[in-house]
Length: 569
Image (cartoon, rainbow, N blue to C red; front, side, top):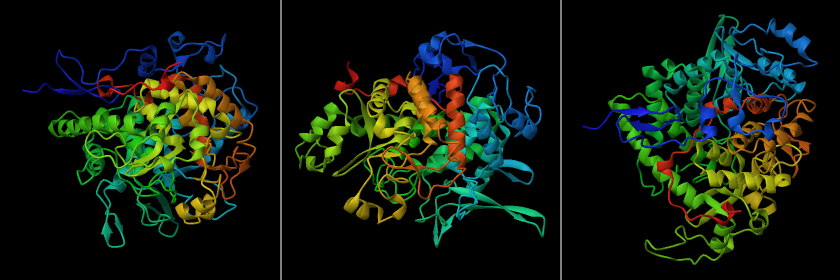
């Protein structure tokens, strides 16, 4: 008889017998810090950058994030008393005046509060942008992926109610019939966004959802379901409330998503086959196939699902399927998507038309497809997960979100995480420049841009998804930096944003090789730019917040990979 199955707080399966856990978690100082539920108190005699994680001590009570600011008086007027330790609904922010912080933090909280959407008296999310100077399109809707940094900001500030309501509402929307023309989407598909409609005549409110049938390009969001699972775990870890995830409707919602992405078919790879425009890069950008962003989110969502699934018979069956997929996926990604100077040299010397299991060039990639920029971009010490791998094709572009999620989910090994940080530090001008952070690098130009994007005028060189700089990515960079032991890089990036973000009215993205110019079609007061800054700031001040969005390495999942030259100093 098989032993009962349990799940660790990191989202990994364990069998409750004397043989130990299936995925045994490392016992490092950082792991112990992340598993703590209470915030830490950072002594101010030395900067955080100069201190090791194991020097951080636990403190009470929780420290809230508004501190002495020239804008404090206006904030007090807006939100009333903010010194009460009791939860105050959405009356953010609350504060203990113990540490100086940048004055734009107060403005950011006010802007985030203005973006809140209510449904029948309850806060249910934040709209994409509050920019009335241009056509709204779908920027007046609540996007699943966009709300994640807002949700993390509210959780970190002790305001979980809006996150709970959002999870409930999007779960209800998942059960709707989803049709694009005459074709019905899979039952597990989560909406890309939803909108609250007010009827003043009937004094009624309704919700409409978009599953891709209204989206530009008519593409369903593959990432929404993954972000929903990741956020549900973050809520559970932050609040300690397991009852929400254990509800039958939530368990069913998780399993519907898993059924959709774990289905068997003709694919010979453990990665998830996707169309262009199915994620944050929601325009045609040549990321079809197996984009790194989706694979990293897929990996993280699977691990979070292990943490959330109940240990009943059906839950165990799903858990077993997840474990098998995680082993295959981690091996595939760490082996074939990873690029450093040694691997680059190996690809450069590939032979083609190899047959049998002994083939080295398993995807029949032509060495002539290597672009010149790759050789100049790759530092001696450093590496990254490339954008895509499929038959006869390797997309060598750097994609920020996928690499940061790879670190946070521990899809990247500790050595690979360190190499990714080495790359960012070595290529700071190219990837960070004057405004963090490049969504991808490099941009496509001239003939390549015309063919791949379909002459998309929004995705011209160094703009929007084509090499634009997105402030929202700051929170992901900060989380990855903290987990990798490089908080000084995050501090440097945050200081860059603080010189411009408020002055520029929180743009959606920036243009140019260095991110010097506000994007030509960028919305102002973009909510996830605001929330991304707040989350980065709070996480750097209190690294224990990282525990709600970070997973530690599963040693049993680590494949035997030839050590790279970039991992040895």
